[in-house]
Amino acid sequence: MIDLMRALVSRTFYLPIALLVAISIGIATYNRNASSPIAENDAAHVPTAPGGDSVAGQVPVATNPSAPTLVGRKVCGECHAENYQRHSQHGHAQTFHDVADTDLVAKFAGKQFDAGEGYGTYQYQSDSAGKLFVTLESQFGDEPFPLPYALGSGQHAQTMLTLVPGLDGQTEGIEHRVSCYADDRIALTPGHSKKKPRSTFEFFGDASRGQPLQRCIYCHTTRGAVVGETVQDLIANVNCEKCHGAGSEHVRLARINGKPPPYSIGEESWDTESELQLCGDCHRLPRSVTEKEIREYPDLLVRFQPIGLLRSRCYLESNRELKCTTCHNPHLTIQELDRTDHVRDCLRCHESGKEAHVACPVEPKTGCIECHMPAIETDQGLSFHDHWIRVRED
Image (cartoon, rainbow, N blue to C red; front, side, top):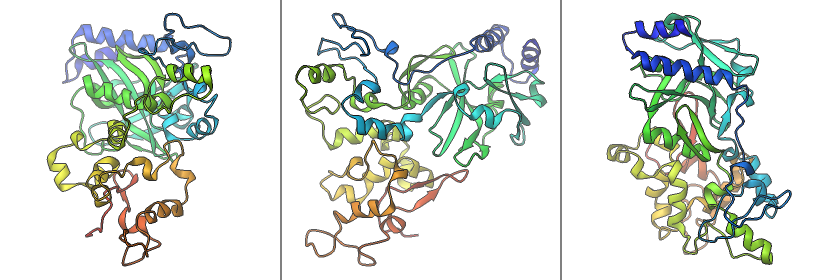
């Protein structure tokens, strides 16, 4: 580790000694912690409200309706077994991981990867505790850089994340320059092909801090906050209560009479706009991008489905009632659906022979997706269906 500190000091990107000591302490802490389990829906992460009773085998449930608490997806599964099982196969249930608990260690350890001009060659190794590290000999010799967290379900890709202290004491999140894709291919992380290191840490990946970093954790977890070089108060993955809200009051009412009021975010005013705001909070809304991007609509925007959907005639001419769940079951992974299921969704509003419907004049019963919502390749072979549903000019 001392060698790494010397190497960092000698770099053009000079770092103060205090920071180098902080880095050393942070990596040493990572090495000391032989296990850092991530709670999927751990009862230990659920605060018990005053007066809440702890029943064997059950999560304590708040008795104060004004302050509902998280109960965990297993409690939701007591009554909603089908959705619980479906969700477990969904990408949302696999969005945040401790790398040591994944197969990424086996996929990377012992391998090397040419990170490109100006970077050098990464070499990956693991230790006896199953933790993954990367070295960059051309810059830092054989000193290891930890890769503790992984973001992404793996249905598209998984990218590793390291938290380090920044120059001014703020935490920096280093999104590793290399990702593992669904076909077990190891390649550059999307968006990194044209990047160059702006700081010493960025020899290992792209840095973010402050709100962008917190948002990264927010969208990949049910709960969690970056504090120092760790994610605290963590409930990993996008579970039931990420979308439906804290469920303790709903559970309390269900256990009283077995027929609780309908529950959707806990609000009676839940409507189409509420759903679009909810999904768009992480899948992006027009406010998340520039006016130039909205105007030019580059291929990259197909990753952010609500942006395209909101400008499509299907949405505008449905009296703005078209929403994500019109076509998607949020508990059911897209891989379980056949293309004909999606075409059936289209035909609900575009069936020929119905005066109120506008049927496709080219092919009224098939080919809807390929023609009006084609898969667009964005980067590193990743493809996403364009949700700006339209008659395409290209």
